Image 1 (cartoon, protein in one colour):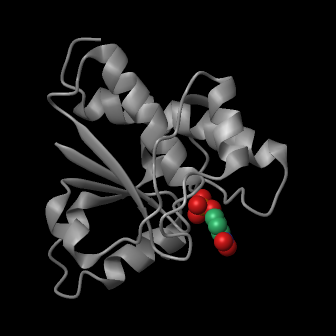
Image 2: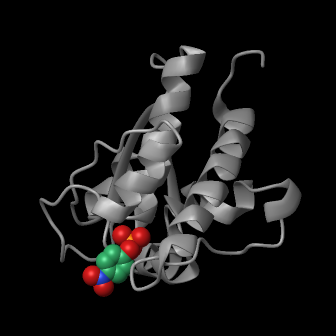
Length: 158
Ligand code: 4NP
């Protein structure tokens, strides 16, 4: 199964989700079953690694973020089995490329996988213009939602 995380710039939220899921895939020995990538609805940061602040907050929790920013393309709609938008604006922009409405069922909001204290969230807030708390909030949500994704798609007993 191929999973793609999508945010706006592909330097903060989707790289964090990508790094955390990759880490868990390794821990759970799921590399044969799940492939992960990330992209941005804007290609503004194309070629850049994850934002340094995002990397620092992820590193503190034991994750590395290997992503290099790239723009989301129409082709991704065909290639991936599950496309996970970090916020509603990303979700809408992804579906704008689905002109014939063929792929809607594989596009989901990240927060639909969140549970417990994060159930009330509908979006992963954009941390780019804020302070450290925003990046911590991204990490909290991402760790929680990734477990939800694994519960649904990581078909090993856990
Ligand atoms: P991301 O955060 O969508 O989580 O990667 C952002 C990164 C860059 C910008 C906005 C959000 N920007 O405006 O450059």
